[in-house]
Amino acid sequence: MADFFARVVTWVEQENHRFIGILRGLSEQGWRASIFCPGWSVADVVAHMTLGARFYAHVIPAGAAGRLEMPFGAADMESFWSYRKKVGDELVALSDEERIDAFGEAVWGLQEVFEGVQPDNLDKQAWHWLAPCPIRTFPGQRLYELILHDWDIRNQPDGDLHAPSLPVAVDCLLERFPIFFGARGDKDFSGIICFETNEPERKWALRIQEGKSEILLSDDGYCDARVVCCGSDLVLLTTGRASLEHKERAGRLRIEGDRAKATRVLEVLSRPF
Image 1 (cartoon, rainbow, N blue to C red):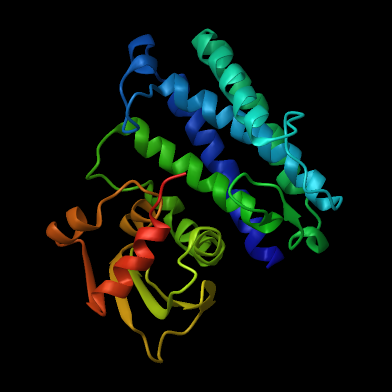
Image 2 (cartoon, helix red, strand yellow):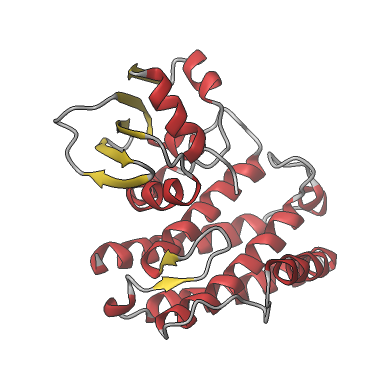
C-alpha cells in the first residue's frame, strides 16, 4: 500500500509540472476561453484547483492527528462553500501571473504534505465534503483533478486523457469505486460488476451487497455484468465527463450480461462532484 501511495504521489508531482507548463503557455484570450465545464473559464478552473490543494493540505495532517476537521476555519458546509466562493472569486480576479503563482504555491505545499505522510497514517480518515476518506486516497483524487482539468481545458470531448498517467489513474479506481459507491450508492443493490480495460490492460470486479462494496482483484468467477472499454473512457465515464450512450454508440464501450445492473452501478459512479 505504501509503495502504491508513493507511486501516485510521484505522478502527481509530474502532472503538477506539466499543468503549470500548460498555464504558462496560455495567452490572455486562452485564460478566458470556454472549457468543457459549462460556464467556466480556465481562470475558474485554476482557482478551483488552488483551493482544492489548500483544502487537502489542511485535512490530511488533521486526519493524521486523528481529527476529522473541515478546512478554512469552516464550522459547517455553508461556511465551507461560502469561503470557497469568496476566495475563488478573488483568485479569478488576479492577474494571470499572480494566479499561476498562487496555484504553484498551493500545489507544491500539498506535495510536501503528500510526501510527509507516514505509512501508519495511510488508513486514517480525513475530512471530505462527500464522505470521510482514507488519507491514502487523496493523491489519487488529486491526480484525477490534474488530468481531468487538463482535459476540460482542451475541450475536446472525444479526446483521451493524458496517456502517460493513465495506468496509475486506472489503478486508483480500485480505491475510488468502493468509497464513492458506498457514499452515494443504492443501499438495496446486490451484484458483481466486472470491469475490463485496455490501454492499460486491467481486470477486476466490484462486488456490492446491500450498499457495501469491495474490489475483487480476480474476475474469473461469476459476474452479473461486464463493462469493457479503454482506461481513459472508464475514468471519464466515472467522473461524470462522458455519456454511456455516446461511448456505446461510438463503439468504445460495451456491456455484457445484465445491462440493468451494470447501468445502475455506472449511474452511481458517474455522478459528477
